[in-house]
Length: 555
Image (cartoon, rainbow, N blue to C red; front, top):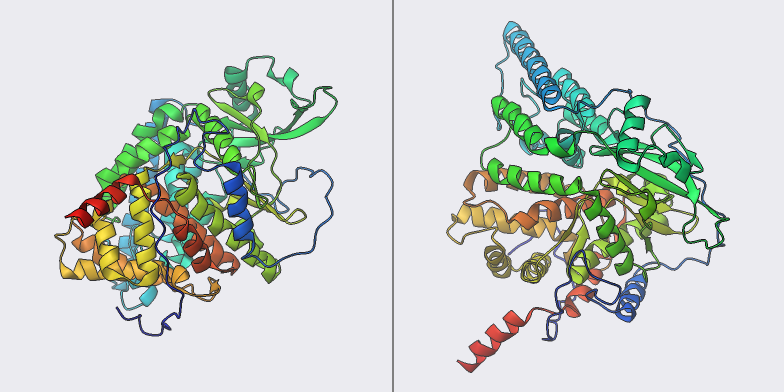
């Protein structure tokens, strides 16, 4: 394979095949203890130390004083609007949204007809003469997705909250080059957060989960939310530190309170939203929407399970306890329930806001973000898959990153991870056969696809693999055309694909694309190939492959 025009062929040290070793036993995502994780504490310390060698050293920093919880310097103006909690209220909400979007579409169609412009309302419509428009994942000239309708959609999603808002936030984590400007502005509003519960609804909701006397367990509670997300809103509070035997030390915490009615409305919300979207013809053919919707329902239902989130957060804390670069806040069980989760306050700046920091800090953030992502997948096989930039907080005084929000944590099967590593390495090495073989084994391809689809799939893989193909450091800030190229190839793949992607790919690819986009946003330079090569060379492939290879050698 030759590199795309304008790309320099990387001069890179090839990957050395790892030694054949027995596969580590699977780890139960709930019941695992400190000694049950896939790697020992000593191995994790060694892994962290090796990866740290790729990061420029920094003089020792003084131990900072206790972090004081702060709110954003430019507070986001949020409306206090009650969450529509009953099924009929939510149906009415979606009905009102549909009526508003329909009126806006009719108005735009009439306006264009008056001006003599031909309306464009298909998934491949719009001004395709523009490279950005041709590669956009949402048509930029659609009579449906006008600036007014995009604003209507954003306002409605922020009011409805729940699954509808979550899907909008997932879409918002895309590069600006593949989303029309009017949609990007609306999605940025969605990503910043939802409307908030009025004080009376908030009080009733917390009481329903923690009991009437819950305030006796806190020293201070801020009724103004620190953040308002899709499933719940977060409030700052202060409690007596449960780890202090004398009960004299206070602890700042974050209380995440689930919106009423959200958990039981996941399936109906997604169905209503998809009915609405299907009327617009905005989704391109080949998305296998039914498959994606089924996966979304499953994942979002799990995100409403705060018991699962507590267990996942505790598990990741154990896995990263020896990593000097990352911290997972501890959970405060006494203030947790089915609809409330309370954790230690984590200071820091959302990583996408780090673009103004010195280059060495941006490089450090990007390097540690990609390193922990590789460890989650190829070492732990357990990953926090929500790529929202606010879930990764950089605390500059301590040079430490905080990882939060584990509602979307997911464990990946060993066989899937084995094949996925082979595919990533094939992408980095521009090995077309290896990429196709691994893609078929994973379920991305059937093997019966047309040459056009095979070529587009391979080229998309090579584009995504560019950071891992470059020896030395890869400059994400200077290579932002990756997303545009992949989006262009994606249209070909959607047209010719024969099968939906494997279920594991949805959450995994959200996380991986989020990590890449964060590095692009802050202009980080990352030794991606070195980290992948080290991960590959010490990786323990499963016993199944070793047995197959032994049988082949015997034959």
